[in-house]
Length: 404
Ligand code: FAD
Image (cartoon, rainbow, N blue to C red; front, side, top):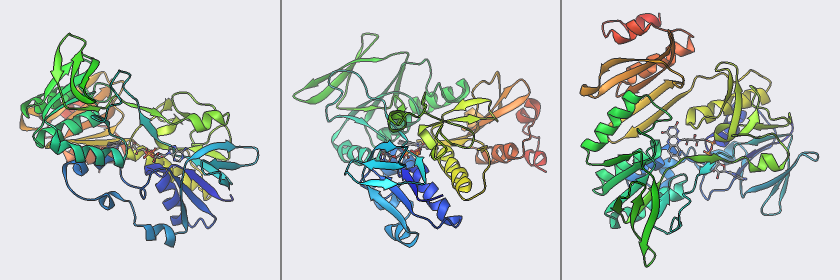
């Protein structure tokens, strides 16, 4: 194979390096890291990390010694271009690295709010550890947060900010929260729970301007004419995949770096994984780009297997989670395209699952405080089995019997 150079040391990049060594790969591995930390877990950045006082080391996948022991070269810097003919990656430092195989694990970056004053220090985003640190540091001096975007990250932060005693308003253009990702039943549950916690959720509205005085944010104006006072704004309006490095090297890109079911780009010596990859999925029939830890780490494992002689199409089952206040949402499968939702359990008891069907085909399960249903869903999918909507709705139906 020759040296494997990995661009991006996030969830996917770290995992490729670790899995390659685990599989006995003995050639050079370089992990190019443009963040000033050892590779770390991102999910806590909008959850436990921002709530607590633990230091950055609590987020690291592995201590520095691991990389030394495994001879994984962590290279601080940024890849700026790829010379495909010569099989070289150029770094911003001027350094050049030869690759046998190049892995693009560049992730995604925040979509920025396109409004005047959006670059003031009181307007924050959440993607990297430094963002979470910055928010944690300024929160004690803030009293009123407006969160723009009711996706996972916006709502996770909203719940934490409220627990920390801030007044919290959440703005969302869609008619319900997390509309792209979950069923109406689950959106409604979370809307109710966040409102009970004292968070004001404004649906079907947009921020039209940010007001400030002397460089400090004072409020946000909304598309319906209202004005909300604020001394902190947190923006969670989605991400853009980092595809530029691939595109500039002449590799096909669309809503992600285009790869086949083996995660290979049009150049057989270059693969792309994780948030930046638009991958062909025979199982789901089309191309997918997912943003989850499961997707990045399973891509990484599949690619490491390929590079060590065990080539199989990528075919893992998606799963995801989000912690919001006291509630844990877990999703098994991909629920997009459902035409029927069956509830198991009781939203009023704060524990239920939404089984999503297309016809009689179970697409996925969204579970709230029902970890057992979630694990059941993952095991059922791994066995390529299903249960009927009637069985799902019937609490006396023993889920385990479907796995026997
Ligand atoms: P990333 O982890 O983003 O890593 C990409 C890395 O590449 C970054 O460090 C980036 O700086 C670097 N990079 C980019 N370009 C270059 C370059 N040219 N040279 C060098 N380095 C470069 N998922 C879940 O499943 N559950 C959750 O609860 C959850 N919560 C989340 C909370 C937050 C706040 C965020 C931001 C994400 C969350 N996610 C969650 C999503 C999950 O973290 C991502 O899907 C995952 O990190 C994707 O891994 P990745 O390796 O593709 O990209």
